[in-house]
Length: 387
Ligand SMILES: *Cc1c(COP(=O)(O)O)cnc(C)c1O
Image 1 (cartoon, rainbow, N blue to C red):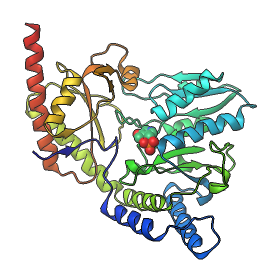
Image 2: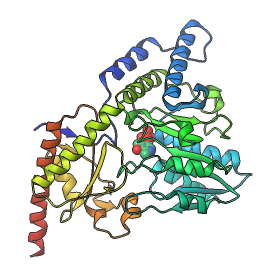
Image 3: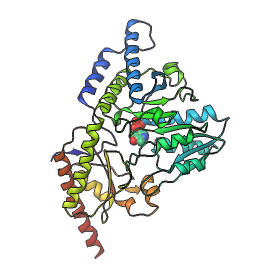
Image 4: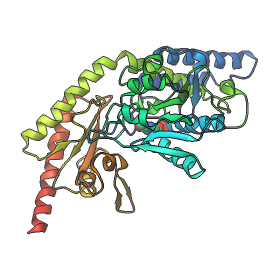
């Protein structure tokens, strides 16, 4: 049975054009960009070109792009870097309860170290309210960090509205755009953000590479001590092949954005129509919200997530639940808890389908049929057990 990969929000396959660029640079552009000889200058040229290409896609200046070791590192640099640079001005941070762990755990660490944190709630669709941000702002707020779009349910946050509110406040505004970059149009000035994180492996690039956008003038302390790379903001020899491949992946993602969004929207409808046609009971999480085109989070009443994931895997379908399974026990998704409350049934029966490169309509129809089979079987077992 063929495997169908529907977990593109977790990571993506590398596009052939990107892999080609990566291996070409790996073989040929091995110089250290800090070296003054020709080999080093050649690597420096690749680095500069990649930086300009990525800056252009964001409407930013090349000097505002800091290459990092991925989305988590970018989030950490933004959060710890702001806290360190601005701790004398204030110690209050605003964030939401549905952030990725790259943000969540960094902010928690600062909270444990004595910073005060306002954790904003979300509504049933997973949306942060800009008015809540406004009310939470204080004189000593130094950082607001709200993700551009959620990685579990896909909800797009009102970043522009929050940016508008923050225009009149000195707090730095960071957004984790790892899931949104390359999927929806992003312009740093239109969004009004000071710091923005992205990662290559979520857009068909290599793993372990990302960037942090830092608006000119935004205070930030480096998180690494070492050399003077990336204008002293991120020490360590740059991963030139991965950065070059990231730039290529980002360009392709932005060029193909509209077509992919249309196709993924069609996949969503195909999936839910097919499940409906199979007579399966299901509910789409964050259905009323504006969501990323490639993420579809579905709750299947009468099933149990552990059994569902095992059954889908056996059926060749790769998906995620927001919940982390550790040693056979389920740690409910903090995102679904924030949306539906503790103990809600959605916490135990939701699955994330996420679409991307290489999928065709027939894969989605196949996946829906196999999912329907698994759900029917589990529903029978569940009902049987209750008799
Ligand atoms: C995947 C992801 C990250 C982490 O990025 P890595 O490059 O894997 O470290 C951070 N935030 C969001 C929203 C993500 O989806």
